[in-house]
Image (cartoon, rainbow, N blue to C red; front, side, top):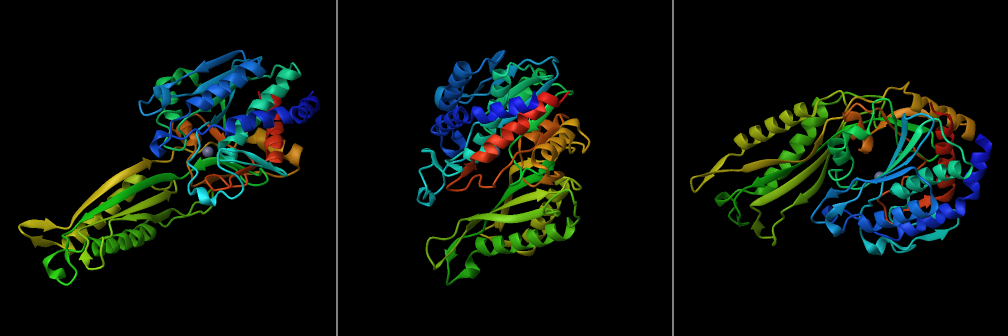
Length: 419
Ligand SMILES: [Zn+2]
């Protein structure tokens, strides 16, 4: 039976590629990045689900977002009933990141998918279209062979992954929590490595913050009359960089890199002319912290550094105290408990990779954030796995067709075997 289903995955390859291309043509960019949201792509997906598949149930859980087209952010769950009501979830996202600089798209335009050799080029091809199609056509192979799997299969197609998940995964967990069970298995195919030998069970905590520094703008020839916000900003960024690296220096070998990272990523507020001392400056940090530390302790180190620098560079100008330094949190998410290494889905993926690819998969953690973090925060043991060439978010993003088909076989295998 298993080999017949794997053969079927090969046979329906052209259908899978056709649906893949139809979906890639439709942009699905969050209003946070200036897009219309995901409704057009969701409607196309529902059309495919209705025309080509016979799912037992297709449910829509649309959240409201007045900024988006039709004022909704669509989330869809397709259920294929198994012998058991216990479910294997495969959760993918339908939104994509914006193209970035259009001049960098040298192979094709972002939403004009193009096949060259073994690759399909388009925005959203690897992230996360490939896994969406792989999971969908794994179910299709089972349906064609009239196999009912042991577990109920739930494919979730979710919005808003790239801009924080408020209208997608977080919305589902907060407002429709009854959908999820502790006993279910949760597979999130949204990260991985080139040969599918990496199974992700942990994610670092994320902290992104902005420091807004206000001094006093004056002519560059008379700095004593003002306060240079840029200089304060440089000093503050350097101090925070040094102090965080020094204080939070433990390593955790589950992760690559094993240490926490603290990176200044953006600056804003240079003056408009060489002879003006800027009265305003801004610097942004992105920090990925190993779970051995709490983000609150990182924040108190930052606040202490701010207070000390304010004291050191204090200047009173026209009865006002400078500098003014504000700390604004962009994103703060303490990493939840990792999925256990002996989780049955983890073991099943390992076994499958050994049998189908003759390779030994390892478990580990990443610095990125996927749906798995939100699921783990609710104590659902999510597992992240897929075969990725790591071109997500880049210009000329592509998906390798062999990865699409071979991952589909892995999903089909797991659907047949997991209990
Ligand atoms: Zn993704």
